Image (tube, rainbow, N blue to C red; front, side):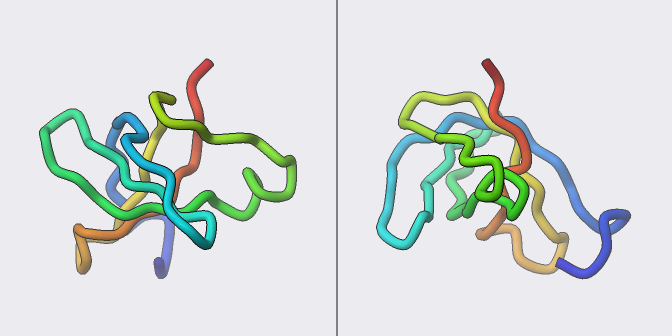
Length: 73
């Protein structure tokens, strides 16, 4: 991800936990993407579980991968 201005944000729900701290997220528009937790989420040890509502940031160049930037309560 190059800059924050290029990023596209989507809301979604975690549908599956994968190895290496990866997650499969189903977006509100129906697409499924592969996502990882952002550095600040790892630093502050924010847990992400199946069923959690999250914000996913993606680059316009690859819409199959993303970064989880926020977990809703």
